[in-house]
Image (cartoon, rainbow, N blue to C red; front, side, top):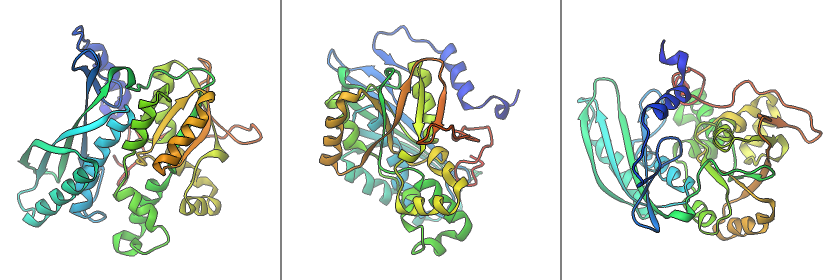
Length: 345
């Protein structure tokens, strides 16, 4: 059987069945935004790793080496944020074709350093290698959290409110604009903010940390593959259903304008992916505290739906209760559904 017939989710499930852990230091292995291992009785280590592949996750036509460096660090920071942790150290592995200019290498690491400095994390190692098939970047991020403050995907309760930070669909709209008009045509175009969101995502580290410290979330994940597919991860791990209210989705002016002109474009905020916002669930009585977090961080937090009892599945509904048909929930590796650069990712 080919990988495109299996898909990433099934592959991960097989790995979970094969690699079981009896070591008491392993609190969470495969299946969340980061692995969780014990440091001592109170603290734990958060570990995550991400890979960006040229032609799948990015194109050098669309992005500069510096922005690529920033993004490679940001996406791993987002995983630590989704666990409610504090990022500390990271490693970078980069494989480059031998004809790559030194300027690319230098500018890439300039972007890495800019992002690292902005979030107070430190590069402590990595690897460089030649490549025969484009640029491949892998970033491993290590963070820390109090054991009783880590937020997993598996804690959502029936009746919990579903929240999301920021706005949705910007990255997908930005990618679409880049593909249609190219980098030079969109720097000052109608979708320049969406393009910036795609090329230079902002991980919600401070929001995730506050939500964790104040114990406001029952579950949390970052939106990398699409709102609905990432919500499904929470629902599956928590053994619950979920309903999203379409009109409540927070949209930027650019996405709102585009959706108003192209109704089918609702798929951008529902399944576009790569927004790197935080999606989390919380009891309704925590609403005031959550909005205080939004005020303190300057990051919008919007209630968009509710967790349902087991067996209810994932649904999108309109204000009048009518169900909204969704063609795809988001991106899954190997399946060939649109997601990133051509989304052949």
